[in-house]
Image 1 (cartoon, rainbow, N blue to C red):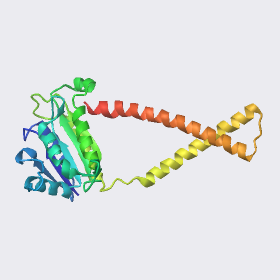
Image 2 (tube, helix red, strand yellow):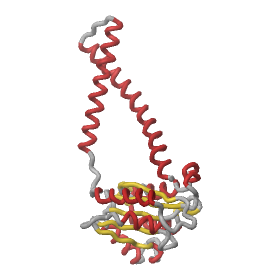
Image 3 (tube, rainbow, N blue to C red):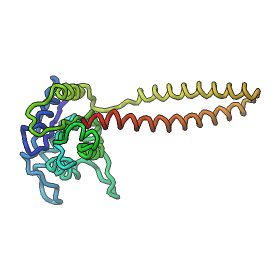
Length: 265
């Protein structure tokens, strides 16, 4: 497996590079890693009928890599211009366009990626206001459009005058980098999802039978086969609808407070 670090910062050896190095340092043999510094390339968009050797060179590296580590600072609440220009110029190569201009994953589908960014804002300022959120959203929007699978992300706050990453941040980036070695070429969890679905249906059926039995006992009723079946189906799907809505709301809430909020720090 090959890992490609993509550094989109004006400073080649600043905080962003320190974060990237820490993640890539965890890549274990026989896996290999490489860094491309975008400022070393004259990146321009494709023009019909004209060769674009720079983009061709970068595309070859992207195709060869199984994992991309996107590292770029946050400036003025958004992704650095260096990385944004790279994404803009890559647009025609990253996805496949249909006749209506819709985008679809193409040759990069099922690869993996990690997002790294940093900002001058302090930890709590970023936590409350989400200074780096737009950067992560841009990276996610671009790469998921290409069919890539996200491994994780990390942010370093309060970078003004920072010359060394704190031990806690180094530990966080180390754990993130170690996930690379466990990333598979395809993220096929079909069997796992079938087991989860079976468990959910089994539990829901049990609860439905318990509710149905309790109702019949309280009402002192005895139903025939079809009446029993229809009442079971009604209770089952009513219970399923309520449960799905509850867990959807719970999932959104937990994601916001445990992932979005946490990653801002």
